[in-house]
Length: 420
Picture 1 (spheres, one colour):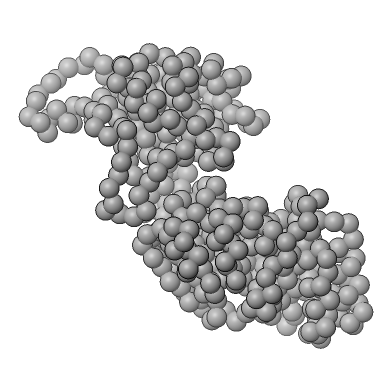
Picture 2 (spheres, one colour):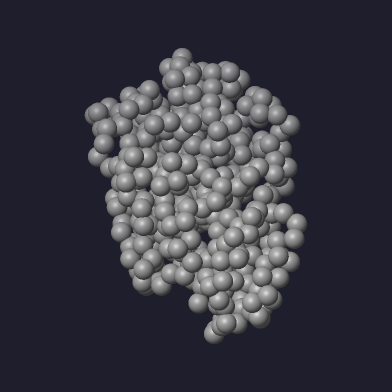
């Protein structure tokens, strides 16, 4: 396996044992007050900013920060992580984590948490609303009425009942959309590169081309991994049925917007709804530029798929709880990048949290060090994932500095924390 980089010495000294009141939290992109309240209640010092920060700005602010909270715009790059001298964890207050260099975070022993389920319903409801609005041509009728034109005509307007919905990406959002769309009377097909269980009467398509050729509405629900950049372009739009609709509520980089505009202007596609864009403004009030602006049969929304009060409150509470549990107990359940470990807390003991390279004999080596220093193990749990292992060990109160130094000095150690 590749050699692992050692974390900076400053991290070891700052994070071996930290008082809750000394934990600094930086939240970006107007994260919901519920998160601020929960993190503050845990005794942390919380700073919350309205907008995203670019790489240079974030590097200048990340020093001394233990917990970083972001949404989808802020990029946590390798340079940012290298500048983070105290960072314990990153909380993505959203579904996706492609804006975070997860590999670099793992190599530094920084945990990454997200909210994989909290805003699913909000995204699904927006997709359904847009499907109905486009199928009934509501956006065009609305614009005509505001312009003073009464045009009571059924031409081009349809019921969604009986129409074929093609879902590209059958994960948490895709599956829930599938069920609700069937409840509206739609027929559902889906395509996913992973082996997914079809729900209800949904039909799995063997290829993307097969789905495109048979769908009245195509909606994308894929992640933003680099391999998906430009995934949907001119060739895919050309394979869609004439007069069909297109939705993208996933990631902006997966769609060629110039090609989408061409197929809308030509009339090959009857309409589109887009919530995510390759380049998005950092904050409210900034100008939005897109090749899709000005088209009457296109619904444009400012990345609000998960932006309901209910979803944002749920996300704020969920991710904030994960961060506080990680700081206080070392719990990594549902971590994106570290093995999931949760060990009940035993009062009166020290807890050693050890992130390490996943090589044979680490557990035995740790226990040998503790035994050599007459440190009694009261509870222990180890889990591994890929290149990394995560070990929680509860020990008696006679933990010595020399024992910790030996554990830090192990060649496999990525990060060590001690919790009281």
